[in-house]
Length: 322
Image (tube, rainbow, N blue to C red; front, side, top):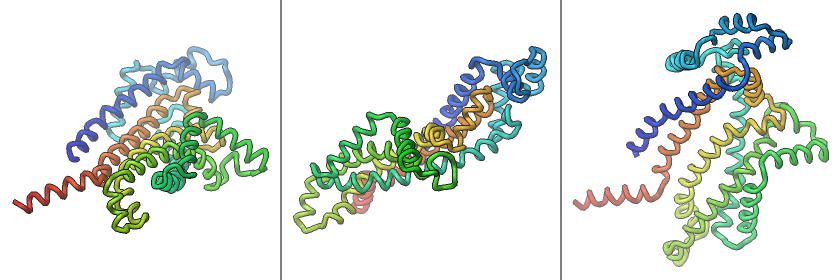
């Protein structure tokens, strides 16, 4: 386990560096002149001369080559400074966290709802195959894999806003405005999680020791607690970590549909005016968050995996026998 964690930490740095380089390069070489676009935004006019653009480019310090700009930015990152946003003239980290708080709340709510939706029905369908719960899990997983997420989000917005006349559907009115977006994201991911957990649960229930436990009068709850959950939890942790990573990035689409002023509004404006320092810094932070989640999964998985515990107990018993 230690070797696996060390390898994950070693791979963290080059992975994040590659992400930052690609994001920086994509925005730098994208069509359009950052200085001209920013000046047009500030002056509210399209009539910007070449001299004005050159002067503004020098003032911003972006008149250097791509290599010089990237390595200057990289030096700042090594000191914990992600630079200043070209459009807001504020530290990137300050702007990022001011907007990303809402996105993070949606993501955490989505994970909570996903667990509440997927676990009960997956365990029930896995312990009682071919039942109503089992059929629903199959239908649910096929539905969520077949229908685009934005289409489901638009349909729910239409139902809540037009049909039910619910005024808190579009816009941000506090935590209650995040419930519906989080439910949509969790509903789409929970179908896949429920299917995988159901299959894992069914595999465990087919094991001979389950029949042996039942013959000794062990109740279904005890079988679930002592035999099913120890096998299901490691798998669920791995899937949830992947889903959290998807939520951290996928929440942008939901925020756009529900008009929530989170990270989506920030990134859209930054792309429109080629604010590559803001985009690169934001993606750098998100990259570190996702890599940290993967390292956490690598750390927690062996501790939850019952097979590893059995191996450890076997080694301890062998030592005691010696």
